Image 1: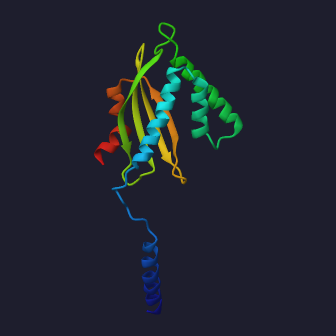
Image 2: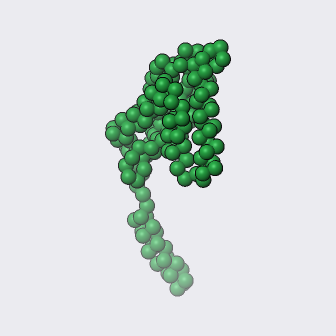
Image 3: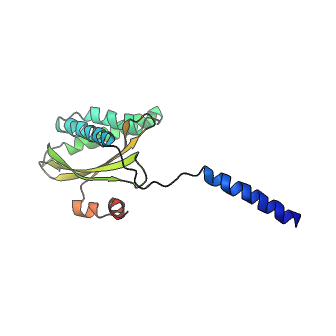
Length: 173
């Protein structure tokens, strides 16, 4: 009997204390307008550099943001990888598929419900040979600065790309 009373006493003290420190779920959190604007500026800088064929600057920017904690050898190999991919994008047809960039549109702005610090922008870029879908994921760090967390591009059909599960998820939350 004493054991049962002790167990109930311990549980009665542990359960309320553990719930005091739990985080409340706030599904109304959305990214602040200034963070969204900063993200659009970062994307604009990348597209402007792509249009002006400043591939080295884009590669440096990507590695500095995404790979800030990578060791030096990984930073060098990733920078060279991004640089070569960006140079291939700028090859004009018939040598390349895409060629010069002449415009882009923001086609989706998404965020995870309950988080105001992580969000995604999806762009469609128009080139002389074809179009590309760009996915940028941004993170607001502890200092309140919007940083690039992921960048990727695809030459898939935009309608197919936009209907993949991870692209559709924010629409059904």
